[in-house]
Amino acid sequence: MIKAGSIAKGMFLLIKDDPYEVVEREFVNPGKGSAFVRLKLKNLKTGQVLKQVNKSQETVEDIEVENKTFQFLYADDSGFHFMDLETYEQLVISKAGVEDKQYFLKEGEEYQLIIWENTPIDIALPFKMVFEVTDAEHAIKGDTVSGGTKPVTIETGLEVKVPLFIKKGDKILINTDTKDYVERVNN
Amino acid sequence: MDIFLITGEIKINLCYIPYMPMDIQQFENFSLLKQAVRQFFRNRNYLEVDTPLLAPFLIPEGAIEIFATEFIRPGHAAVPLYLVPSPELWMKRIIADSGRSVFQICRCFRNGETLGRLHNMEFSMLEWYTVRADYMDSIVHTEELLTFIRRRLGVGTLTRFGDVTINWEPPFLRVSMDKIFKDSLGFGLAELDDLEDLRDRCRGKEITVGPDDTWEQLFHKLFLSFVEPELPRDKPVVLYDYPAGIPTLAKAKQGTPAAERWELYIGGIELANCFSEETDKGKVLNFFDHESERKKRAVVSPQLDRELPDYISRLPECSGVALGMDRLFMLLYNIAQIQGLSFSPFYDRMD
Image 1 (cartoon, rainbow over the protein chains, first blue to last red):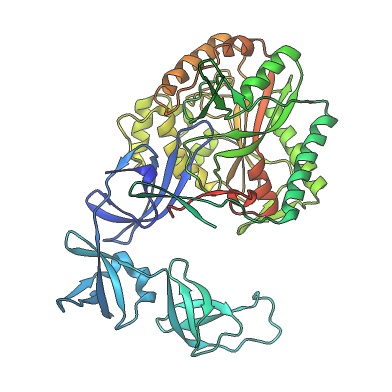
Image 2: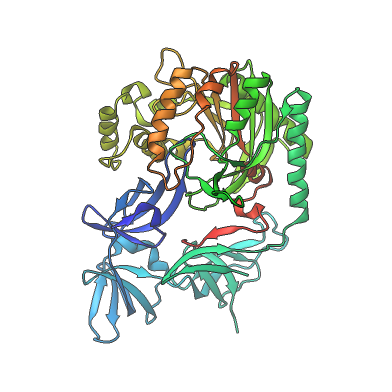
């Protein structure tokens, strides 16, 4: 158990037997009122988002998880397939809870999986990751309306807004939390 | 330079920056803001007061944690002192004695609140009291004040704050708490009158109901879950007639379950709080007893201002407003975090 006031983004909670990831956490002290924590939680089984307000002093159930390194193999209808690099055992994470992370999964790449009661419940992404630009239109000269950015597509299919000088084949750093472009990382 | 405070094995994740170089223009603008406020109230013959930040006793307010210190007096026992969470206790004494409308800009201190984009442990407060006025008059004064400030600072009617454009043109939108509850949740304040009704309503909306949750706490859970996030951000909103079930020193509104109280929200930020001030000695005694009891459970349980019922009963009819100056500055100049206003900020690194 943990005090709601100690909850941080990225922690895992147990609510009605389902594991939830804390996606957002904000402290609120309404005028003349007690201290509260406003949480946005994601059900890791169904992907459903739950909004909840707790008193800072209220206790909630947190869960003990462990991180383990796996290699991402491929995705199909049954989910995301990973391999344990020590035992070579394979496992599948159903897409429901972690669908928004598909854009950051590269085949053959290693990832940290969050394991709870021997079941993988989440993929812990690095804060920033490098991707190749696979589709980019040439910038239109003199286009200032778009604020000096244009959309490009990266190798996983995600569309990102980037500065006009980014070309197809460039390698760019992406913030996996906000899905925003950070910088070009060509050698 | 970051300094991490560490105790034992636990990293507290509290980060302190001893000196953060700031834009000089920002100091300039904050100074102009304070000047504009002073000019506005001086033009209207309010008395500017300058009251102590260290107090030997405080008004009991159950929801606020206090910073405690002591006066070390050579040869005598140390005297406990507290940093004021609001200058109310001094200002109301001055009004009771002088009968004047008064204002003050001062630092206030709140302990026990987690640092965030809107919260710092010390902040600048503008507090003003208008005699022979009620809370509805104070809405108009606030509109006039904010318009005066914007003109003085050369800030237009439309400002950008994050991803919203705020239109500051008065009159501000006025919505009663009862109406906004009916609109957002389908039931009004009259239907939340007793604790059992409120518990049922909360459960019906899948709100967690703890065995020791008070009426105020359950009301705020509903409010913060369904009402506050939906408030318009593109214009100032005055939420008025708060339920009397939240203990305050606001007058009860005759014949209703509401208190004569409002809160002003701009850009989704709670900027100011206002009452028609309670002047009934009996009601203040009730408040005092209730909040003293709550205060016993606080980490710091300060000496209490026992003269409160006396000077409050000598107050003329008046209305008081407390407005967060740092938050106002953030809104006027599109600054995302309150820490951005300090050259020596504390940050919470939990995120």
